[in-house]
Length: 88
Ligand SMILES: Cc1cc2nc3c(=O)[nH]c(=O)nc-3n(C[C@H](O)[C@H](O)[C@H](O)COP(=O)(O)OP(=O)(O)OC[C@H]3O[C@@H](n4cnc5c(N)ncnc54)[C@H](O)[C@@H]3O)c2cc1C
Image 1 (tube, protein in one colour):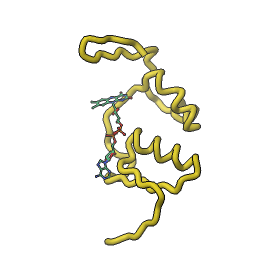
Image 2 (cartoon, helix red, strand yellow):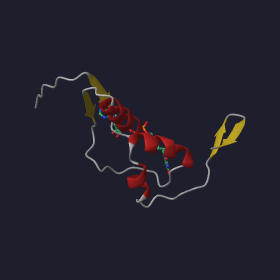
Image 3 (cartoon, protein in one colour):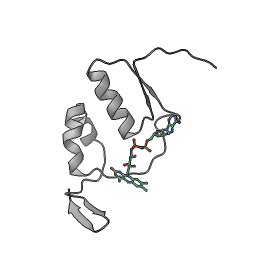
């Protein structure tokens, strides 16, 4: 099936990155087409959200809605990258 779309910006992938940028660009008034190859909700790994994500959820206006879902709530996350270790 061929569908013709006219849009200003095309975002490929509706994971956290793609859906966030598509949402932000839409809030800024851009005409955005988000293309995702899988039906949603899709099977996906992940069970917790680190506290560092909360300001971003605020910016998207979805913090309260996500916080009512049953994610694990760690106080901090340990990041190890080569010889560096930090907590966020
Ligand atoms: C085992 C594991 C456990 C994890 N646990 C956690 C956790 O507990 N908490 C947490 O915060 N993070 C967790 N993560 C990390 C988290 O899953 C990633 O950081 C996050 O999914 C990355 O988002 P993304 O949008 O960059 O990519 P993705 O989530 O991979 O999204 C990419 C999307 O693009 C779509 N796509 C790809 N190619 C195309 C195409 N050609 N056309 C259309 N659509 C396409 C895919 O279907 C997918 O939906 C975990 C990761 C792994 C591997």
